[in-house]
Amino acid sequence: MDYGGYPYEEPYARPRRRVNYFAWTVAVLLLSGFALAAWLGSFYIFDQPERPDSYRILQRLHKIDPPKRFELTAAPAGEFVTAKQLYDRYIGMGSAELARANAELARNYIRNYQQVRGLVPYVVGRYTIVATRALGPDDVFTSGMVALTTAGESGELLMEHLYPANPEVLPLMKQTLNVGLEVKLERTHDLSAVIHAERLPDGRIMITAVPLLYGSYTVTRGLGTFRLEPPLSLNLAAGWPLFKPQERAKIEQHYADYRQKIATTQGGPVPVPGLSASATPPPAQNELVRVEQARPVEAPAVTPIPAKSEKLAKATLSSKGRKGTKKQKLESPAPAGSPAQPIIAQKPSAPASTPIAVASAATPRTAIATPEPTVAAAQVAPMPTTTPVPVLPAQPVPAGASDVALASNAGGGSWKTFPAGKMPLGRLIGTGDLRDVVDRGLAGERVYLRGQFVVNFSDANRAVLRPRTTLTSKMLHFGAGSSTRIIVEFPSGYTPPQQGAVVNRDETRPYEITEVRKQEDGQLNVFVREIMQPN
Image (cartoon, rainbow, N blue to C red; front, side):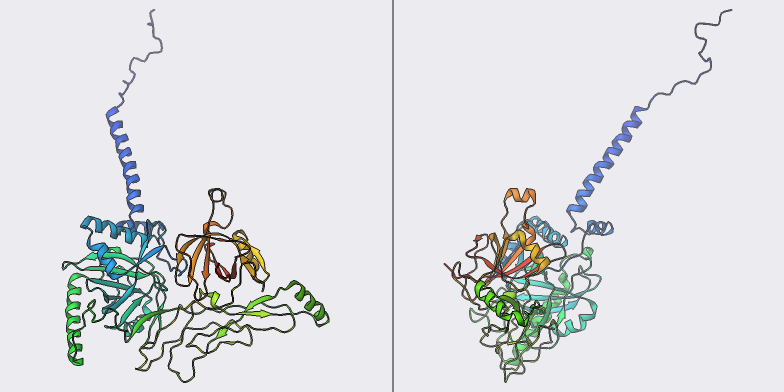
């Protein structure tokens, strides 16, 4: 009986299916295309947050932070440009180049200037308000007010100056921001960054600027102070600029009629922005200025010496020659006979101008501060209280006082300086010991700072320095590094170093530390002052 050569072969087995290589090829190509599209889409979204759809996606993914408030000494590095310089910069750009510049300006603002190539343009100069209106949900900034202004030195430049704020302060802002009010932007305490530029059909340039400090504002002749707040989110779908062409045309026609009416009433020529009869612009009758709330200075407690060891303590102090120091809070009374002068709030970031009181073991003594010519002599408070000094509303000014201005950021005080190596005894530290000072405080003693620094910013009486670190220190994370900022105050008559210069301060020519502050992100702000006489 023959069973065949394949006893295990099934006579009715299923035929084997052939592999469909074409289908698998199509599937792999589709998946590869999807991965490539996702990769390119991530670059498109994350690298271009200024686009409305990208900004919306990043908000839903919680990958973007709202605009933040900057401090004057922690603002991004920038350049201060006038109206003429802004016009010359943007008028020569083509359409594509201007679009790229606007995309970069908006991108830097949305990213809170974390990845900035070059310098941030800050606006300076005098601008006159032509029209104002409240911001709404159909604008890029949904709360606050925006003012359309003309440059005082160049009639070819318009500026939209933004004032983001909470809705509850809008009534006061509408009373303050009136047509004809002058806005004076100075490099000492105003940081209004350009975030958009538009070329108008008639050849003019209109820029959009927003103050990065979001401070408090008032007028020299008026009542009330309002404070700005950073916006929680932006409505980029509304588009730039905020004043659309039809609205701007109506505003300019209305403003031309307004100027003609004022000129007819006064019987003089019609003032044209940028075309003044003299080279120096006339003083403004009313100005919008920024004020800053003064912060209290806490005086460290002085440990009393027992009476039985008073003689021994005096002998010890005379042998060492060291005296503890503490800060006293000062109050500047208004000059007699002028009760209508406005209250002046001093800038909090200038602790170097605070007079120093020398505390001895037995009898505390107070050094006398040199008064300003227009301010009464300073009086030392009897007790070191910590009551904050509020920013009061500006009071009306008499009609004859046309030179009144708020000195909210005054500086350049006077204090004693010493030759090299002749300063009073004190503790000498480097930048690596600053965090110990934050934890322990100055404790009423003199603390001097030495090291090598690079000048990041230089002004009339102030400079901002960074510790100079080597490549090895950067790789091994030695010292304070870039998280430390030294703010130097110079006495009147001193010339601060230029931006980019390298400053070497050793044990014979150190800086005197007046205060050390630590921010929430770990940034150290070290306030020092120049006490050495120039070579």
